[in-house]
Amino acid sequence: MQKFLTTAVLLTATLLSCAQQKEKKQYSMATTNNTTQVAAATTDTATFGEGCFWCTEAFFQRLEGVISVTSGYGGGHVENPTYEQVCDKTTGHVELARIVYDPSKISYDELLEVFWKTHDPTTKDRQGNDVGPQYKSVIYYHSEEQKQKAEKYKAELDKSGAWDKPIVTTIEPFKNFYPAENYHQDYYNNNQQQGYCYFVIRPKLEKFEKVFKDKLKKH
Image (tube, rainbow, N blue to C red; front, side, top):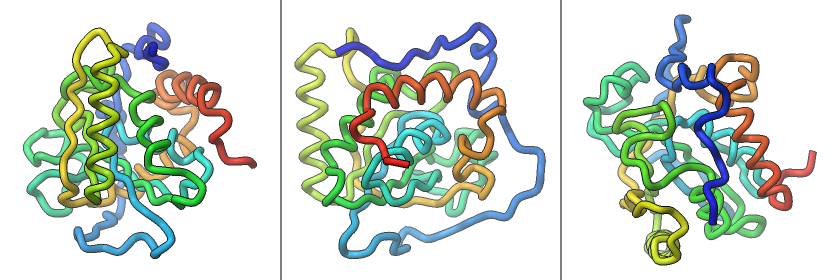
């Protein structure tokens, strides 16, 4: 298997990172607690961290069977953290995507396949120019079945030599999730001409859509 995404998109993109694109405007904070019910009995939830949540959200939103994707923070000890607090690297939180999906249309195994193929799981606390503990590669499992599948997939990939370096992705029990500020939600779709979106996310998304064309929503 080859890495199918590249971090060197254009020379100008090397100056771009998720954290550098801070919003200057005021926003209202969308908060929740870790007992919030987000899915009906016929849906399931996956929670992944694979770098900047703007990228992760854009990938999973386009998959058939995915009902909603929420960008947020989780795994840390600070309740209702702000983006600035998470960027300060003291909260223990990771940028995450909470994915609510219909298991009759897309399986957890298929979501795992997308997870592994849309980032580099061998770089610790880093994806491209986004560096820090908030960008670590992590799977937060919601059930024993999810745990077993994630661990099996990781072991098989490591054994196959898909990457030159060992996988550093951690597989941990779900702890908490706090939705990010409103302006982070649906970020790529609402800001396609913004620098990070145009130079970093768009080329990745174009490659993603070619690789997973059979799994995309029909518009």
